Every structure is written in structure tokens, then in C-alpha cells.
Length: 146
Image: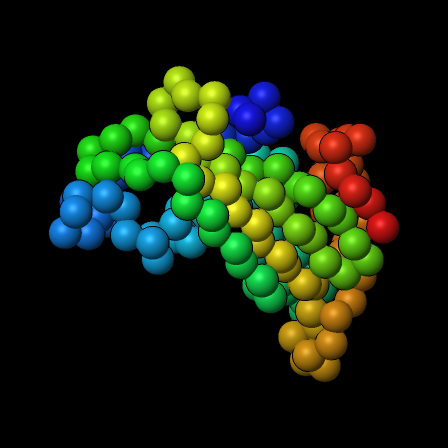
């Protein structure tokens, strides 16, 4: 439901994003999700690139799930909602949903799992306290923290 989210990233479906049936091609959903996650981080505000430079660690996407519930058409205005569903020691699970303009039921839902990884050792490391604090501030009790 729309009320489960505080962050929304607006889009208008472009011609290049639809298939021959005039609906959003399945692979485009991950682009929507990735863009919305970038904007979610900006809204926290989390200086993603600054943190990568300072820590030598970055997130790797290790899991993505998309569930298609209703079609989304060319030129339709949509919003991709993001929230943090789970905050682990070195991982973050994001819940996402795609809503049509002014709709309460999602047309699609998804999940993206990131693992924070030392880029030299290629091993998971703990999520920074800076990011952990921001996520807990905005999401609060909605996060399943581990």
C-alpha cells in the first residue's frame, strides 16, 4: 500500500521503455528501482559517492525480485516507492513498489538486497553508522534490524 512508504520517485513512461504491446518491458523495472534507490539515498541525505571514497567500501546488489501485478503503459505517470525493509550487519534489503498516479494499490512490487563490501578485500563489512543512523531516523520501527 502507498501508506507503507514515505519516499516516492516520479517517472513518466517513455516510448523506449515499452514493448510491442505498449506496456513497460520487464527489464525496465530494475532501472526504475535503481534510479529510485539513488534518489532515496539523496533524500536521506546520504552522500553515497563521498562515503565510497572515504571508506573504500561500496554496495553490491546480490538479489533483485520483481512481481508484476498490473500493466504500466506508455506515457503513464508513475511513482516508485522505496523503503528499507531490513537492516543487517552488512546488508540492506529494500522494499519497492510502483504506483500509478494517485493509486493506492501497487502495479508492481520488488525487493533489492545490497551487501556492503570492502572493494580491496572483496569481503562484506559492516554498514557505516552514518547510513545506519539515517535509515533508522527515517524508517524507525518499520525496519527489521538485525
